[in-house]
Length: 368
Image (cartoon, rainbow, N blue to C red; front, side, top):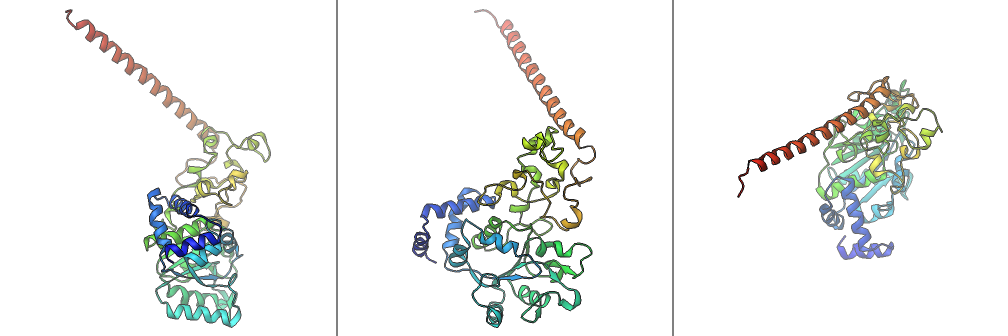
């Protein structure tokens, strides 16, 4: 799409050029790039060459699709029509049945190594794949064919990234993540969460358009721009944790005043995602901001390892809280107070010493 064509599309959707540039700036912020990257993002979106996307849905609740459909920067229609070429998506495509499957087959055969595969939902492997079939084919066979020929595969949501609820014990369907079901898949990215945030889905596509490559990933193959820090690190209630101020019961005074939810089961200290900064519903709010603890839905095996959801984790690797959460919180506050006192004393001593030294020098000066 040329710049003039884009401007016409913006006008048709009631958007100005400034709205478009604001979107590019917001994407730069989500990606952790400097604001100067907005111009590069704008140029990439205006490029007429659009990547082909194939969206597969397997053992899922459709939550990630619903999340994308509620994207506001841009809307899903803008994203599909103006930025990418979404050739296959069961939920929103007009075609159905054999016609839809023919589109998928043609796309894969004619664009080997050129399209991006997005997979939503886990892949069941039990009973020879009979737990999930589409067009008479097992999900496992479809995933192997489509992901095997893709330039990159994005596992959207925790079910696709780590197996999610279907893979929780006892896992009767033999559900697996995309990475486990199709080992060795090229350029796999896990965009976990239940569901994945539409802002992160959009940002990932924008990054690929701009950089022509995949973003830096963590050890779980999640993009660092979205999973590079713990929720606890950027939580708006972090100050209350440091001060040892916790909610003890739902609806108590501490809860009404927005105190830390760790004792109520918040998994923020053990969960990596950018929920506190990107938030949901056009940045309106997020679960902890609404007074509900984080459930750790972006982490592997969270249905097994993060439960009970309303009970606090006794031990968190790399995070010194648990049974002694109150002493730790108070200890942190105490250390901060001691540090401030020591700093103040040192500053007074430094200034006093400097003053004495100046006076001594003054006395030593010969009179003119």
